[in-house]
Length: 249
Image (cartoon, rainbow, N blue to C red; front, top):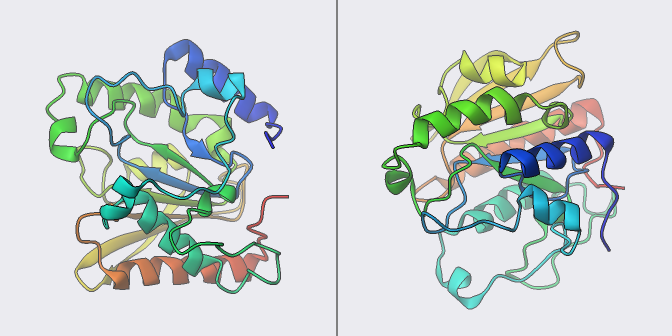
């Protein structure tokens, strides 16, 4: 079933259609936002899914659970499989209490029902190395930071994860993250060899309070299980402390 959109999301997708900006996938009514680096397809690919036009046409329900293709299943480092693992750990204690339905199949992707995803870069690329070769890489990032990430829709998420520790994408320490997302740096932690930075919104800083933002590396290509476990634990504690219902009504 295609859902209804908030006024903030409808304004965003209208703007993104006009400016040819990538919007994202998943559930726009979610409480959790996952932010990656870029859409992992070949450079020059004309994107449709996740763009403003596709959201406005409402031909697809991007919040429906699905089973990955055989090609995706063969790639154990597929980003969305890592997202799925993180989400399952976050909601492990909420499955019964909030009627979040467990997976029907081992490889089923279900996090899209209760998470929205987007990307720091508006330019598609199969990997980070190729992405940074694009002559428009830096200018496109700057443009997106000045518009998309300061949108009222983005501000509504109480839980945000940024998976990009390369400072060519976004500053890894306090500074740019705080300015873009209106949060305050709290502390840096390390899980095995992987660093992550915790930020919170203080009362009066943001239209959504409380707010947790965790910034870390991308989860593919060697992110440790310790990191994913730690990220989930911080989110779970925040959810408990503030009685946040992760299930989208």
